[in-house]
Amino acid sequence: MLFIDSSDPDLTVDDGRAYYNGMPFSGQVSTLLPDQTEIESLTYVDGYLHGQADGWHPDDTKKYSGTYDHGRRVLDWEYWNENGRLVQHDTFDFAGNLRHRKRWDEAGTLTDDFDAAAIAKPVMDGAVERTNPALSEHHGDGRLLFEGRPFTGQTVEYFYEGGPVVALEWFADGYSHGPDLAWHGDGARQYAGTTAHNQPIGLWLHWHHNGTLAQQNVFSGGGRQILKQSWTDSGESVVAADTPDRPAAHLRSDTALDRTTPHLHEGQPFTGVLEHHSDDTLLSVQDFRDGYPDGLYLEYRDGHQFRTGVNSATGPVGCWYEFYPDGRISREDCYDAGSTLLLRRRWDEEGALAGPMEGLLILNPHTGTPNHHTGKASE
Image (cartoon, rainbow, N blue to C red; front, side, top):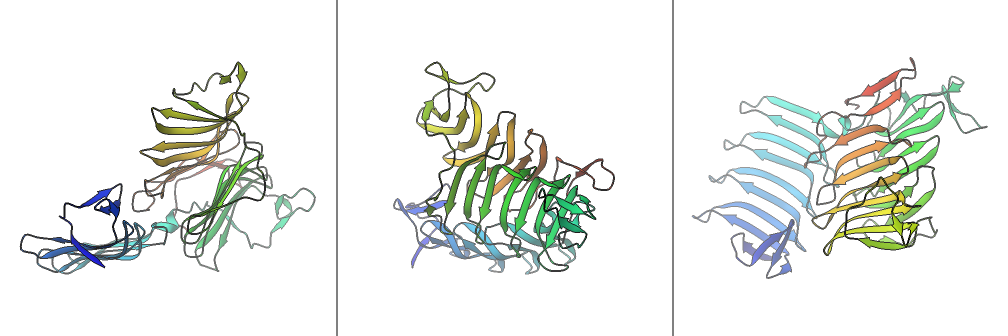
């Protein structure tokens, strides 16, 4: 293993990746004070933080200790003050999302103790467990019944009795209608999407247990499949066996689009994929049908995918996502087929839910009136 000093002029860090003499760096980087006291030790593999990370106060007492996995903080991270007292303990999943956090003040009193994964699961008051015997399937039209009547509300599934939430689904008049969310037993995301009267709409994402994207399915507002993409847990693309209905024609535009009028190509409403560039920089990609945005939208910033979702004739449908540069989700907006916002969630750079959830509008199964959810600890 190569050991170098962080002040080495041949070491550079670009967009979170370390290079030594222009090549992705593998080895250990130490940060030293003028008296050669080591205050930080980081391990890199192929330019990414990977492995043990340690920090020390100037008097050589431990400051922090944790583990990186390809640039993401994972597992347990601990932080100490100058007196050697533990002041913070974070637990991350393998996707780099904060799962649990504890904090103590200088006197050793616990000040924060929250399950970040639990409060990120929008369980509604009155949610019905999916194992409830009062729930049944109507074999004629596929609707879900509660005590013999079409169910309106939310169902919840637990990993085991009293355990973590692993699935949430919304229904209206017996039909799956709204966000459909699932997690692995340890809290890592499994899939997320939106339905409208039992039909998938917009963007559906599935994740491997390690947090990498497993599958992306794109549906129009009417449930028509536009695109299907799959990846292995190491990020290699898997060729889809089917042929989804996505326009094949491609055009390039150097001007921003006017979405209020049809986009014409050679005098005809354009159907295809339109790329928006500024000079040689790709800014966005949008599917069009009959001159209007209809299908997958991708937006890029500083060379990274920043935002993705699906547009229909009415506007955004299904779940839309914004990402941090390292690929972790920073924001999720879910819309119904009429582009009404159903659910909005934001995450900070550590993977914790940032602020209350908002936008979820669903009929209360008991009163039939709109019920807004603003975030609730569920486990």
